Image 1 (cartoon, one colour):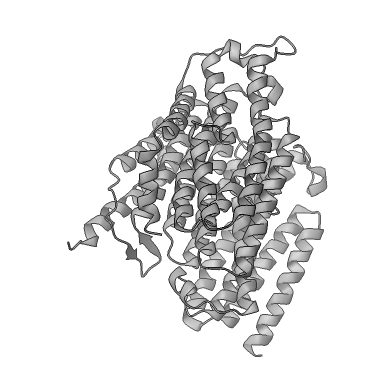
Image 2 (tube, each protein chain N blue to C red; image 1 turned 90 degrees about the vertical axis):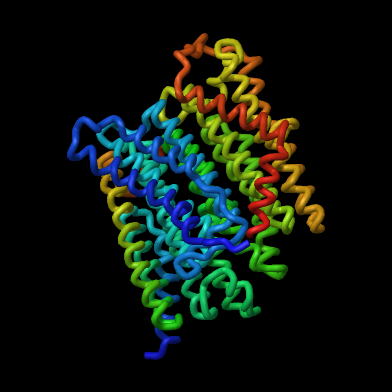
Length: 472
Length: 96
């Protein structure tokens, strides 16, 4: 069957183009038409939903656009749908509980849309340089989003995130400069084809990988994560956990798959082990819910990195893991958002009595915690199972043993949240007033349903992931 | 000056800038060191890489560096007016 790529390209690229147009519209139009103020969120959400609805399933082929800078395939379609879904949920959470002051609402949704477009380009990037530019398009808006409230915690989060993110970018650029000198071209295919065993090439790859590891938050490149997640508006923390991390994962995965063995794989092995061990141990000591979720996100980056070692099955596992993790983490941050009274979010002990006063919210939170911990039948269990099974099949048993042990450690702190919700009495008699359920609650329950259904009926999502993974 | 000398200088500059970034405590200096790092890497890129493509990359990196400086300066100005300090050690609102 012959396939004409032009109409498909038109409809596939219409998505990001529509998002860009909508982003500029919400930024600029309210300046001229004062009546439009306050509608920016709805316009952005509408644009994302329209794009998602008209998003055409990709043909079973890999199509290169812009001389190979952008590769569209079922893989990119899967990841793009994921990215737009995360943006839609982020906007919904922001509509329910505005993070930005009213006069900056336009900028807020503009920055979020731009970050998502950067994420989408990065996920489909065919060469290292495009991937880096897209990574910057993803990161720069998120730095600004973290500090959009101009409050002390937000600004501290933003500057820490900015400084370390930009430091990582500097390392990536130097790595790109080295690789650019050694290879005829920077696209991933020719990087893989002509891999010399030169120490200089290795240095170049390590620089690029450590730059990307900053964004994915692998230990020891994670220093910014707890502070950034704690100080940023909770909606933005959810976006960082779900979207920015997914972008970093996809890039690291592309770099990892260039190597069939050798020192880079060994370094990844150590990064994975250190990440899983350190993040889980550090999470045990946390009292703030947002900090706990931050360490949890570092730990999950480690589990996803385990899946890298599983070859083709590992790729399926990563693609299944990303949406499952995103649902649980957006849901958990959604609950945090509903309960928070100040910017740093509630302490874990502040959840005491939630099981009595708001049983449904507590049940949803418990579902997220169990899914993150990997308790069957929730989706998180299957995500971890597939991630680890692939690595075992490829002979990385010791890595998986460490990851499983650390995952057992993680049950302690996830369970602690649940125990506090159901078994503790609030210390100062403070209760959680049940407000009228709104959009934030809707997002939380949607995510809870997703975590449950993707676990009980994991086949459809897994089949989609497997189909997408074939095009890697 | 040969391409390799130029690249050597740029690596040295990068290393100095990275060391400066990690040791200095002032936010403005950190931002300046960041820009220095990016520009050093950019010089290495142009000095070593195959020509037309590398120059195109370098021009795009100018734009990235400018955008980064823009976001960074905006953040630092807001920080300065909120915290009344530019020393990283004095900005300790969050635990850790």
